[in-house]
Length: 146
Image (tube, rainbow, N blue to C red; front, side, top):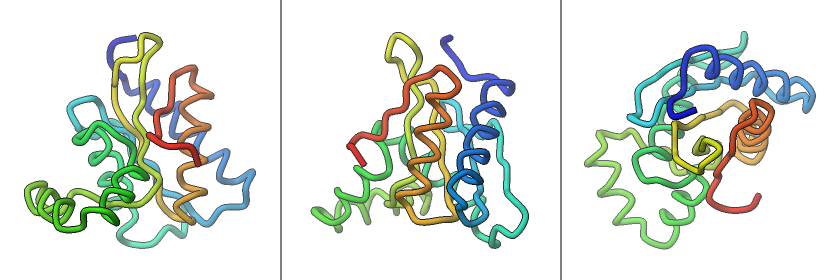
């Protein structure tokens, strides 16, 4: 697979929501983007708060834009806040430096997109993202171990 399609993106999203229910997570919002940062699918569970779609998209977009999971971006923000702040300005506020944005890689290791999840703690969001990508038979790259 060299590119994500709607069927695969929806499959990943549905796996993420199922994992969230297994973990009794708060209502989740799941965004899947292609390698160019374009939205393929967005699912928002009933009860998810108003800004969750934008947060999920931003977690995934930051991962694709910077080539690393949003947990690693959060670590960068702690170590180099001015740099990440400047990047966020360049990105028109599209970066959310918190875990839950995970790169999606194909069987060869090429980045084909990213998933962003928000709604529960960042650790739970990321756990659902990783599990969903793996359940779809792809490689999840969070950038760091949870």
